[in-house]
Amino acid sequence: DTISDISHQLKTPLAVIKANTEVEQMLNGENEWNRSTMQQVERMTGLIANLIRIVRAEEKENDEPIQRIDVSAIVKETADTFKTVATQEKKNLKCEAEPSISCLMRETDLRQLTSLFLDNAIKYCDEEGEIFISVGTKGKNLKLMIY
Image 1 (tube, rainbow, N blue to C red):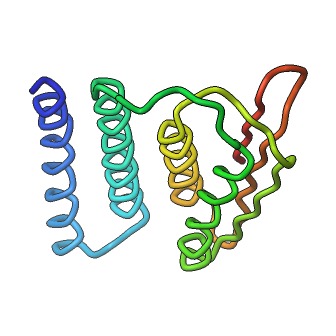
Image 2 (tube, helix red, strand yellow):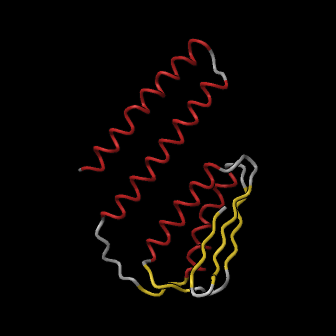
């Protein structure tokens, strides 16, 4: 499995960097430099996990049909599942959606995309920051914004 090989090749150096940094912290104490290194290791680990999810989703044969779905309702429902996580992380998540926006697509694709973006927004938002997700239209195009 190529994705497993790539994952291993990316994760191995990060594991070494993390272990070396932990030893350095034990020997010399925690400081801004080793804290920063650990934060970047965690960030890269998360990015690798997201990349693997995306590649696997693309490789996976999807039998779910493309159909007209209520984008507004699905994005709101997905955002609601992340509100508790955001609150636990001391962040505020707000969702705004124009009612009844529909689109031809796979529901699981929209849920996965929205979840991935919200997960990253929560991870990388400043403490006590605000995450805002909105669904609207621009002409005939669907507009999904997360910031």
